[in-house]
Amino acid sequence: MGIFEQMRAYGHEQVIFFQHKATGLKSIVAIHDTTAGPALGGCRMRPYASEEEMLLDVLRLSRGMTYKCAIADVDNGGGKCVIWGDPNTDKTPEMFRALGRFVEGLGGRFYTGTDVGTYPQDFVHAKRESSYIVGVPVEYGGSGDSSVPTAFGVMQGIRATAKKLWGQTDLQGRTFAIQGLGKVGAKVAVSLAEEGAHVIATDVVADNIERVRSRVPGLEVVGADAIFSVECDIFVPCALGAVLNDHTIPRLRCRAVVGSANNQLEDEERHGAMLQQRGILYAPDYLVNAGGLIQVADELHGANPERVLAKTTAIYDILLRVYDLAVSRGIPTSVAANQLVEHRLQMVADLKQISVGSVKEA
Ligand code: NAD
Image (cartoon, rainbow, N blue to C red; front, top):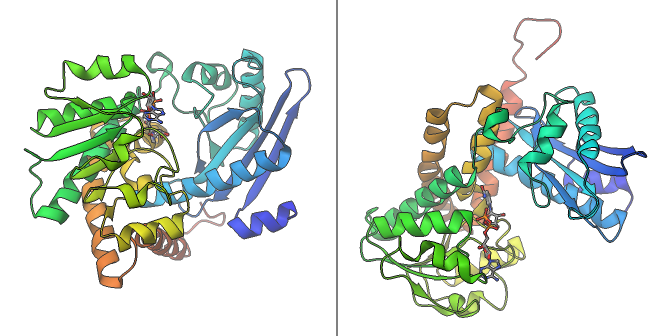
């Protein structure tokens, strides 16, 4: 497929290629949809196998950001940036300054920060050249560790799911199986233990398990593969994408799946429907893991922790709306979430047709 055909297929507004010979920067920014506001999305650095793979990645990820911003009621559109290179060997401060200058040239249509393969420190360099950079360290004006609001959002998703399943948010005595005790998973494990829940967990890095052990009384540890078939109330994937697939869904022995991992459904349509058929309630990942995005987006309005907390708290109500819509329409929850997004974007596009009285519309 040609580039315009791909843009049409995914619904993109704009795709920009950047190259800077002296620093070796090769980057693509994809702006998917700016109905709700300027595009926002992290910058991923990977040694892609080809230009085609790089383009597909940025198109897919930027489209996902449109959905994530819209469902979390954040006034931004979806965008993403990718850099072609090995993050361990090809990075230089100058490369990120060059990226910053290119992003600055987009005049505020796109804001970016860290993603897989890039770190807040990289964007300290980019920020020297651009005012459209977010997620830098606190001492440079950033809003801090995004895993804190992300974990809180997951807990809100868990509470909403408990309400739907059992009519109450009390987690005392319930059992949770957590895959991945990293930045988000560890915080969720501690919060669950504080609420009197029983936690079963796995991680491929033994140190990450040991780090939480003393703060999660009664922690039960299982092997990396065993986590899928553990008997529990809620499975909490906080490690990798594509963990809900043809092989794992039949093995699940839980009532619901609520976790932070991105792109949990290997095939959104097929595996969302498979979970529905098995009677397992699925909390759409891009809603329950939106806390970090909410925090980063809030930097554009002056970084107010109370506002971040309020917006992340609302994940509870939004998820209950998704569940209700799925039941009333007889559709998988993943489809219901997408429908809510599409409805919201349509409403915003429609209200932006109201003239605000100036010649040049905002
Ligand atoms: P992290 O890298 O700190 O933690 C991931 C953990 O999963 C690590 O401890 C790792 O050892 C473990 N792991 C990897 N493979 C595993 C496997 N096969 N089985 C069990 N454990 C395994 O990352 P994080 O920031 O905690 O994020 C977790 C997930 O949530 C990721 O998918 C991430 O994309 C997503 N997410 C994170 C944020 C955030 O704010 N940090 C926001 C949105 C989404």
